[in-house]
Each structure stands twice: as structure tokens, then as C-alpha cells.
Length: 280
Image 1: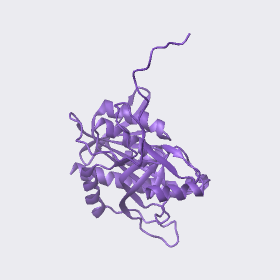
Image 2: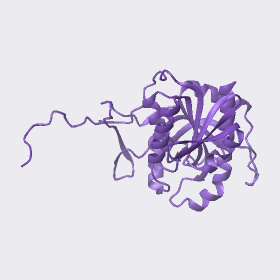
Image 3: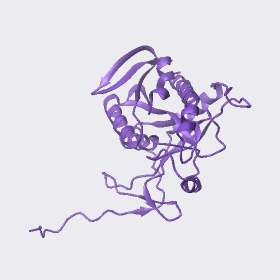
Image 4: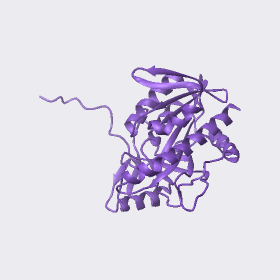
């Protein structure tokens, strides 16, 4: 027979809108090291090559590499694809290393068609575009849902101000590789912008238009929104660095395979430039 005892906890309060994370002071007790994460090995390869005194380690079953860039101690790891993998690895590494900051590097699809293959977007904001009610016109009715602390969880996470300032300094001296594989050739740009995450590799044209209309983003990928959320709750300054690969589309596989290697290089090269700026 079911219990007749009344529940003491009321249903959660849902606040519709697009909640933005409030800026918080970084957590105390952070160590003087930088964690760099990428979703795939090709996204971290050039960061690994930049390490001096490189050593291999493991947290449980998960491997990482450790060394120095410009005198700054750096830990580099691969999360795997998708927000669940990214959340798991970020939580594990943040709790164990307590880094001064965490950087996410890699590729993303170009939902803003003005972004070219290899252009690097530094996340002035990072957000999640797939949390809410999907309504008839393919738009999302976003809301702040109750989190584990009883607060309304944000959708949008601003990049750390100190890291953004360092990124602006690094942009002035960074030299991207020339996109000689394109006609005409060009030099990719590095600039601040907006990056969004969701657990879908390809999406319809209607959904693309809705995300652009609602969030005004430049790049779309599958991890950084969750990484930003973990860092927000643990008090670790975070910045996302992504480079454009394929245009956002319904079936991106062939274009992604062709264009992602160059994009991976550009994001990783700027990540190294940023770490050197932080170390300086």
C-alpha cells in the first residue's frame, strides 16, 4: 500500500528566459598550473608537442600528459566527444589538480557563416543551446531549472575576465598559419565571440536558424558548455578556444573530416600562445 505521508519538498520552480551565470570570485587554494582539455587527440596534439619535460600520468583509468609551456606547469587531457564525457573528465581533473585556470581547445562547426575554416573564436560567452522546451518553430524555450544547490542553473557562462584580458594580449602577437589549402589563401583571424554546445553532431536548417536567432553564436560544438558549467560551480576560471571546421549542417561528416585538422591546429596554436602569455 503506498505511503500517505505528504512530501515536504515542493516541485521545482521553473523560470523562463536565458539565465546568465553571475560572476564569482575564483575558489581559494588553486595551484599554479593550467589544465588544457580537448575532446579528441587531434585537438591537443600540438599542445602536447609544446610541452617541455613531458611526462605521462593517469587519474584512475584516464590518461593525461604533464609538462611546462613558457615556464607554466600544464596538464593536458582528452575528454572524449559529448557533454557527458566532458563533464566527467572536467570534474575529475578540477577536483584533483585544483588548477589556476582551465582551457578547452578544439574545433567547432561554423554556425555563423562569416567565420572561415581556421578562424579562432575565444569564448566571450559559452552556452548550452539544447536545454529547454523545443517548440513548433524549432526554437527553444529556455529556462533556469533548479540545480543541486537550489539555485536556477544558468544557460550562458561568460568567459573569465582575467583570461579574456590575457587572450586579447595574446591575439596581438599570435601568428596563425596561412590557410593555403583554400583558394584564395588567407590568414585566419583570432577574435572574441560566442560558442554554444549541444549533444547533436548535425542539425536541421530550421534548428540552425533558430539557434542563430536566439543566441547570436559564432560556433557550435558538443562539450564546452558543460565544461564551463563545471568550472563555474567549482570556482575555476575558464576559457573556451575553438576554431571553425565545417559549416553547421545536417550531415557534416565528410566536411568535418576534411576541414577539422587545420582548425585543430589553429585552436591549439593559439592555446599555446595564451598559456605563454599567462606564464609571462
